[in-house]
Image (cartoon, rainbow, N blue to C red; front, side, top):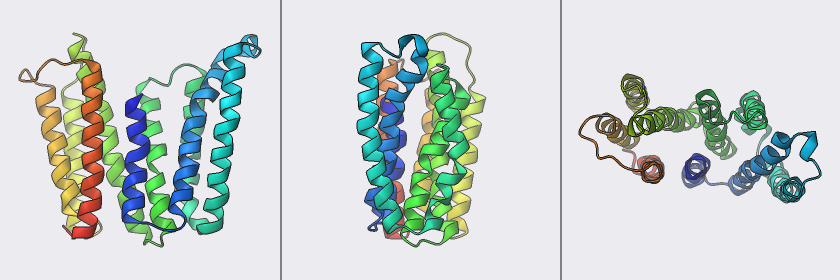
Length: 249
């Protein structure tokens, strides 16, 4: 699950760093609360009526209430400090969040579509934080695009890398093309002045990682190590966004 924690904190940390405001911490609390609610809710929904009275479900319900309190505290603080238009990205991803809950309930959250939709939904937090800090709308959504450009190709890479390591049928082309498109997008955003160049450099590193990682020159590693490296790459991407913003490069 460390991958999903990376998806959670990469946009939050980068967003708070480049667009600090009184609302940013409350928005982060809202998002973290919603994220924590997911697992106990998954246990409750997946259990069905037959397991509503089981010890596991009762425990999950207790944690759901605790995390819901965290979520509500974040909502109250966010509404108090942020402009209403700041929450438009959250409104846009509501159907995606609903689909994610459905996937959890049907035990299909590991499917590719569910993972891709989940990454887009959770990364919307960086746009909300930027808008709450009175960023111009195009630049706020640019931040979101950059994070999406990091997450979606990485999901495709990791899934196919794991298949490769397990000797299953995999695709080398799809992850690499996704990384090329993401790199071109981030570079174009920098050229047109709505983004910075440093994230594009990091995206070039991610592209090289995908090419080598899916080649015969790779070193065979366990799934956990692949996941840990992805957390590192995600942290470096967040740093590139932050440094690029403040340095102007």
